Length: 159
Image (cartoon, rainbow, N blue to C red; front, side):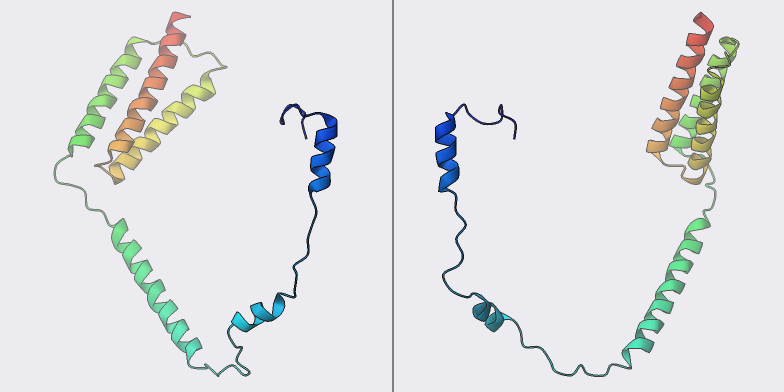
């Protein structure tokens, strides 16, 4: 124990306080009272042979239902017109590409992996937006990724 954790008591007082602490056993045996409150145990379990086939059938129905639900969920029809989030992402991508073209600076070899990772992340986010066209969260993530990439390009252009 660290001496700064407790108050500055004199050593004699601390030793007296330690001497006061004593373990005391219970005055009587507590087990009979505990045993009386426990539920009675059955002697022989009943046979439940019908439960195993029922559980197997329920599991099979559940597996088929989940597989059908996932198969239906993956067949996403493309919307007839782009959503607001898709239009925003497209405009953001056009602005990003135009800004990158204006700041054409050679990429140092030390920053090349970072540039490639940011470009790969942006492509991944765009693919996710194609699957979930109304995701504002993905749009914000795309905006942050583009901002990081542009900041990096700006730093390379001014150095």
